[in-house]
Length: 261
Image 1 (cartoon, rainbow, N blue to C red):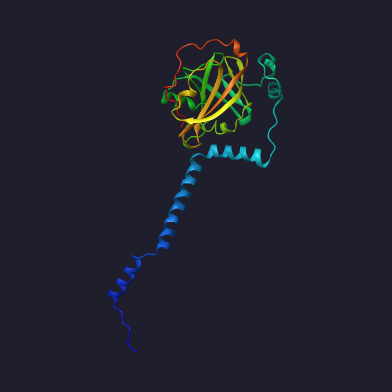
Image 2: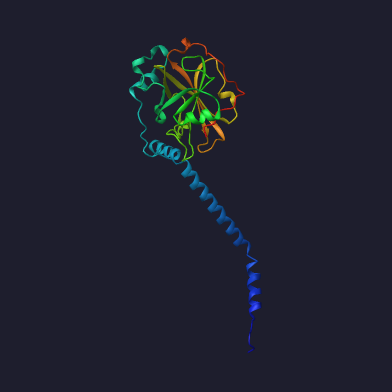
């Protein structure tokens, strides 16, 4: 038998050649591995950055789907839901709510509102740290027109403020849900009438109207500022026919929507 001798140089050439000719399945497996790692990294970062909002949505879903024991309406809610004409609602039947606050029992919101906030990025950003805001140029409660209120659905985990996910559950409101707010000592009741997702530059939701309504807006989907989720609610108490005209300048459809992110 002849000796089979391979020199060191030949071994180097053989292994270099094999290394440079990886099989197609191996390349595909490597690519898939990179995609899985990238996807997992994105999910982890998304959850960490939006932990508060995701926690709220998870707990809400669990209570309403797994436990299947939704919180029953309060006595005050039952009174208003059963008979929603303005003349039939009595002041003592309304829920207890602090002045300059908004309360939405269906999604566990009870938060302060800052009024007449200028529609400018710095003013909006600073005021959102303290709760929800009503944008100057839209109607105030008790005036005819559209009162535009906005707040965070989520925010960066390091952002200042205690209300960075106050509207994380806004998408769970349905027609007929009740919204209360108190302004200048008077409690106002609104009934949800419409919910829609619009583009971030859709000014139709900020423009004035001829009725008396509340439009609550937040960034959508949660964790982004790609679009806006807008919930419109009609005033049902006090009697909206007694509201006064909106005073001062009004925002128009050409105005850029405030950004909550």
